[in-house]
Image 1 (cartoon, one colour):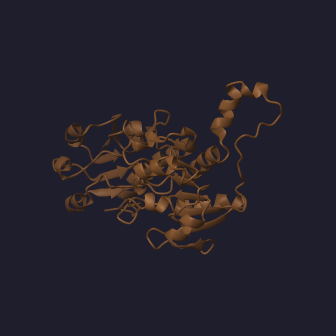
Image 2 (cartoon, helix red, strand yellow):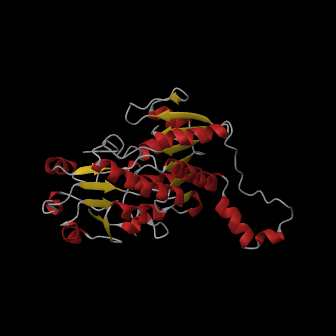
Length: 318
């Protein structure tokens, strides 16, 4: 069969896609613009993509197409209704990045919680050479033990974050955005309670009608002034202008975001207006992208293609 990857660059240049070659003739494109899609997929049986938009307009002439294999969990870039009507299978990969995102959550948290940026700058600027004491404690920080971590979205990643928080002796509460996720190990609360009682609020929910704009200024001012907000779910869950305002007004202590409403970030994104840069950590959507997670992702793509052609149900969406 003929297979093409439309946006291999989103997987990183350090990861090989060679395992996929065992499934058929593979053509690899680093990136594919919207106007290039139709030509590149016209004679392929399997499309592999992360973010390329595939809809009726560019799929209708792909007469050989049997399967769209996503290198992601989300599939909002695929016209599922048309794929179903055209008999095109769609498969995703879930769970490959759970540990990676959980790890990045705590990397961001500790960076903010322990003021690591300013302490590092203090030493490297050579100000520490003039210190009167061996320990220069200018920016106090606290332990996680006995603090409350409120998790928004208790799916696989939320549960992994909760487990790690447990190990630090933190108390975990959670809010289920779907209303269907339950955990007997932790206390489920409403959103207002979570926001007002948590020392750390960590978002791990998908983007849908229930979560879009979930955290605005109204919600942010319910949080403790000493609280830290982390968003590793989807950018549009948090109103970015409202977050910048809350940080500038000292309504919350700090925020860490790995996801943004528009990616890559716009030059006029309101988060650039945050005055105290030490209060905001932004990473470019890398929480999912440990080397191990991306290798697992490639392996799962191979399994999805093989399973689909054996008529097995594996991560099938349509």
